[in-house]
Image (cartoon, rainbow, N blue to C red):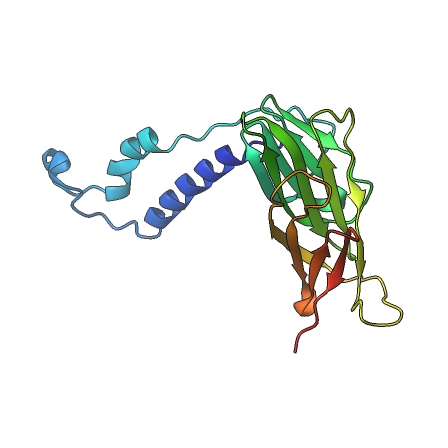
Length: 220
């Protein structure tokens, strides 16, 4: 059952603390509080009650039960608590609008390993543009770009090519592991973000906003 990442992280940290103590089970003096018991108490056992006050492990229904079974999520990005994207195996893209998770149509079965985006706001703090990129296997890079007035924003594939200086640049089929960038300075159509994706065997591609495509960066 998929659960919010914050619960998974809290639970993981708690388990790591318990596991670390369990490696050394020899009795020792846990401090003055157990003096009445002779001081021969496992310090981890003595600390469990305090850990319970610090670390709280809980679960929450994602709303995706039975819809997307056996999801393996690889990366997450969000502009705020009411706008979060997660990507993973078999082209999975999930979005959380603050009220729960929903599945988005990605148009691909390729595993997605990285997601990054940005939002632009006007002087009143209202979002004017959302622009998100997802990258993964087999040269797959997707883009979701929309304004609040758009009724049904959709992920679109972005062309990825080899060295554009060649006479006949070819599609890049390498596996991308992450994507990152710097947001556009404004929402105008002639303003574009600076985005790069990295992958296997030193593969690096850079986004060309004018052409709306990624181009391979050659290494010296």
